[in-house]
Image (cartoon, rainbow, N blue to C red):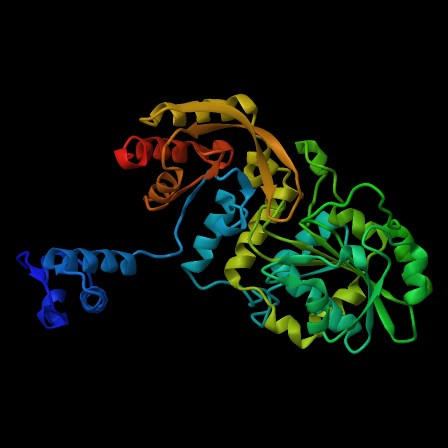
Length: 452
């Protein structure tokens, strides 16, 4: 299409004509047509606003739109944001063994709910139940699609139509504007608030119990931290109270940690095994945080409590698919085999500082502008350890337009995500693989002058 200026909407080409432009030849007919339609609509708006449009601009807009439509929106990205469990970037990165298990199951029929011994219907939960019980010491286990679903299911099954007691200091918002009181309400249970924001005593729980009370809910503050003039009773005391008053104890543990996080220099937090041993009937954790697996809600506890959850209709609504089970099963096997170093989340948190420094230095060297390597801190993220991080080294890229550089890097293949602080664009390689560092170095060598 030869270049010329268009002055009026009637000068715009037909959709079919623009769709035949050679720049769109590589795309499917549907994409070409839709891209041409979008470009012409954009041109019409510009002309009606009094702005002339060139034919070259139309073809460029159409090509950009076709490229956007043909590129998957969900695709791999390089996380150098300084957050290990970045919710926007998918939280935990799967171990190669887990990713391979997903690919293998996805590409074939599978024994998801098929018993090879009897030839009859099997139980999809059987693929992970034994592993979860061995890792947590629980009598039974159930996996749903996320931890919030686990809370709703547990309360619906154990306290639906009755009251649940919850400390005011644990009325958290878990993200996305979803708040614990609302989640309790969706379960069909009533909420009885006890204590104060900073102090809740065992007596507060005891005085709140009525004939209509069915459970006490504990909610570990995994995305914030209270310090100073604070108090709450040990879970063992709350469990004893529940036994005395014939109540269920449901414990939303948040990150679903299976090990002592202090080993990685992170503030110690309760593990699922500790909460089961302390007497909670249902302990709920996440699969895609410090466990290092896929998004899932892990429910472990007593056979009676988990059995009630399993038989509730919501268990079907919240059930996980074969891909999640494949990834989770493979991840749990790594834990059982003592191969924590194979789980990327834990390997990144434990990565030696000298190694991180060398990676940051390579990145700084590849940048065509001025760059520095400085100490910093990598956040755990994902609502796992609020305010917690591990020391790191990161590359600071000097630029007069940090927003432009950040945007340019996000538009690369693969996209590169960093962060802007104090007018400098930073890349933290703690969460990257060696091949990703090489890819970033290649991309940085191509940074245009307008982004420097």
